[in-house]
Image (tube, rainbow, N blue to C red; front, side, top):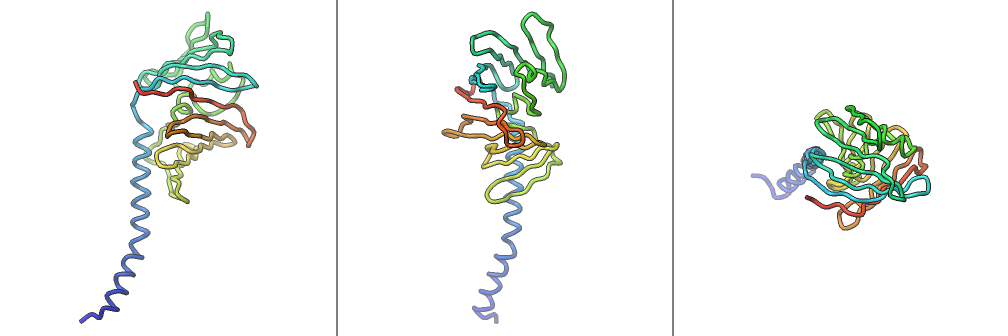
Length: 200
């Protein structure tokens, strides 16, 4: 017959040995939720400002299956519009032919800044994650590495994104993105303020 003491010891040993497995499974579930959310298909109307070179630009438009954004100068002059459709990004400049490509970030040139981040991904905080991404849970954060990027999540919310010398930091208010700060080697390049983000 097993003594109460031996049963207690066996129970403690079982609980301790299973703890890492439960933690690992919990991290895996967290990763799967974040990965699924990175491909979300909700549609939003967005409006805000980009603070760059000491001045504000204004942007507004739709994000989702149909994405179309317009960026204007502080004085209301249209700088460019961007549309995303069927995996292509198209840039529309005033009085110029439309330019399209699969990975076109030429619009950053019109803001006179270099950054590897795509504007649509920055605004939504959704950077697509593939099946072969590496991940781990550290100090209450989920860290995902994919395509050279290192993304830190707090819950399902993007907290920080790093790619080479560039970083994007997310700040929230009432659960929604309010400010995004983009840096290169710890030097601030520009800030994005989200004034309105609503599901449509």
